[in-house]
Image 1 (tube, rainbow, N blue to C red):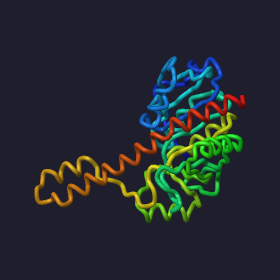
Image 2 (cartoon, rainbow, N blue to C red; image 1 turned 60 degrees about the vertical axis):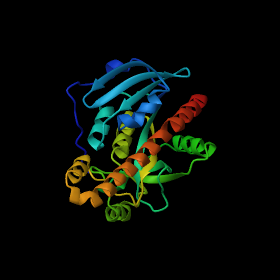
Image 3 (tube, helix red, strand yellow; image 1 turned 180 degrees about the horizontal axis):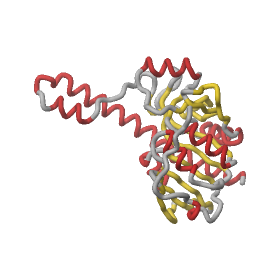
Length: 263
């Protein structure tokens, strides 16, 4: 897969990297980073293209927290703008979809290796020390977790037959839209890389109807029998997503603390 990196109007961001950070954490979406950022003291904030960068302070350590935007190109661009590693460790954090039947909503997936859908045999291996630290955080918190191969795709995958086909083709247990792109950029920068995500949708999760479709159904009284299930499906989907997102802050706080001890 040839990755087209999305470039923003603001060029390099090295002006915000005057010091080495203890750790760099990359979130695709703002909702994934919001509660974690509430635990930190934000020192400065700047943007480049679709990405937002925050210098933050936590328990004596300075962190770089990046919201990259969704998708392989935006994720790659967020790190591609850096000419040197911002920190010894770069961590991808967010939610993911399950491709294996044993994974349930709320399970934590730690990437062992990553790939693109179009090239499943060309993989990047995640840093073993980060994998061990992430797994130890999960063990101590009694969280269900798996160390898996993850695959990055360009379009969201929801239908069960599509998930099964992706699993058969790649042997990956989880799917997202950023992890492998970030792994490639971390490798270019020479930083240790790891990914920790929480499953927000499993093999039985279907894409909920779009809000506009529900509104259209509400305008037609004769379709009331279809409106309520559509509304409930969308509500259930977002409840699972929120529960998965809400697990991230505690995991990351404990991970940063463990990396601080080992620094």
